[in-house]
Image (cartoon, rainbow, N blue to C red):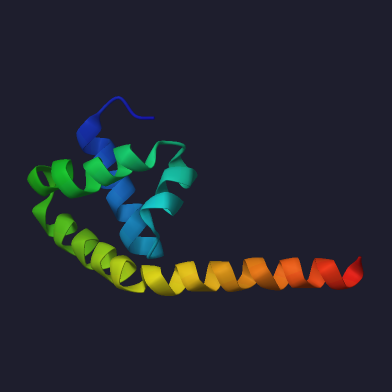
Length: 89
């Protein structure tokens, strides 16, 4: 993606905070792996930009507290689609 790791850390972190995105969303947007995004914004960013790291930490904690809701909603939608398809057939 970017040659400079420090620059990449800040770009990924700024996008995450500005868009209130998930690690998966950031990874998709910048065409990098989730592992790269996670390592950049949790480990590397701490030494590069501590202020931005604090903001990122808040977004990640919020995402973690909501993940069971997102998973449940995804399952609900999956089975609603499955049910609608069976009615059509």
